Every structure is written in structure tokens, then in C-alpha cells.
Length: 119
Image 1: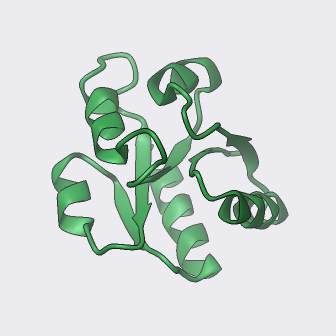
Image 2: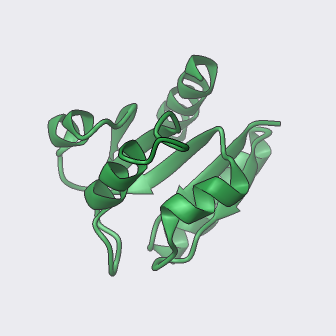
């Protein structure tokens, strides 16, 4: 069962994502808003990370930079999401995909599946 790690600080969004992803057959790991994402990736070894660009106390882009700069986890598939269209910036920082909020569940699922296949 593919494992998806969610780093998102909107509790409602997290709840919806968890329900949706579990229904689609994914194992789901949810991080707290101020979690150490690179450390969590090392511990959980997810197939793909769904990372919000704007977390309460952290920048998703800075987190992505630290993932890409760490030799042991730099190949982790990371899909970024944001209410602002910052796709180009996310891709330039090394994201494997980008979703503009609000997005359709089907778009999320197909993007996650594509990234899991790309691993």
C-alpha cells in the first residue's frame, strides 16, 4: 500500500485528505504543523509527500530545499499545494508536482499515483 505523508496546517483540509486518501487505498501519515519534515521522511519513508507551500511556522519551499539538499532523502517525491499559483517557483525548487487549491480530488489522486509510479 503506497504511503502518503501530509504536511498541511489546515485541520479541515487534513481531515478531508485523510478520508479521501484512505478510501483510495493509501496509507496516510499526517504531520503536525511544526513537524521536522525531513526527519519525518527519514522515519516514515513515504512514497510521496504532499507539502503545503505556506505552513503556520514554516515555509514549504524551505522544507523542500532541505529535502533536496539531503543526500539520503533527496529523491523523495514531493507534491506541493497552495492557494496561490506558485507552480513555477515550486518546480524550480525541485517539486515533482503542484496543485493549486482548491483542487479536485481526482486531480490529487492522479498526481499522487503518477509520482508513486515515477519512484
